[in-house]
Image 1 (cartoon, rainbow, N blue to C red):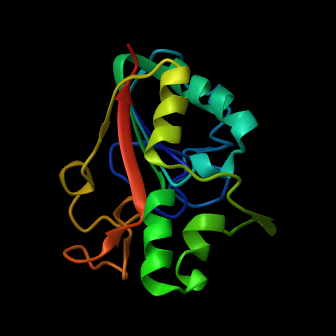
Image 2 (spheres, rainbow, N blue to C red; image 1 turned 120 degrees about the horizontal axis):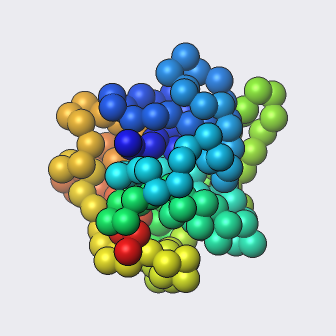
Image 3 (cartoon, rainbow, N blue to C red; image 1 turned 90 degrees about the horizontal axis):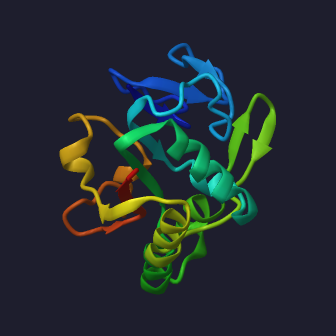
Length: 179
């Protein structure tokens, strides 16, 4: 079983889609912080792109533990978040804060309610959160190898937009394993 958490409009074939918004492909309309509809120790893979930053630091441990409880032993959590190190580099290169406002603060209209990012991560802070919550074998993952061709989500975001060869990758993409 594979879960796509916080998928929004994006669909990945072969995944169970869970999101608080209402799209035709959503299997469970729910916060990704509460996966009680999924049996513990049943998932091979959880994919969460640009969703963890919507939880503040006091909530992140509970969210990561909930996700971990759904993974099988050896299951993989594949995560993507805005990368603070990249955002700083983009700002230093352009001196224009409007280039980083989207990934830094986020803004999403969910059924008339506007929600925003509540935190931001760099490699050390995300790795620390993952280790603290019992994940092991933390490593970067390559979207070009792991996602279907022509699939587009924020794990693939670059500045300037989609300048993959010469741009700065906006996202921090890490994966880890449940021991």
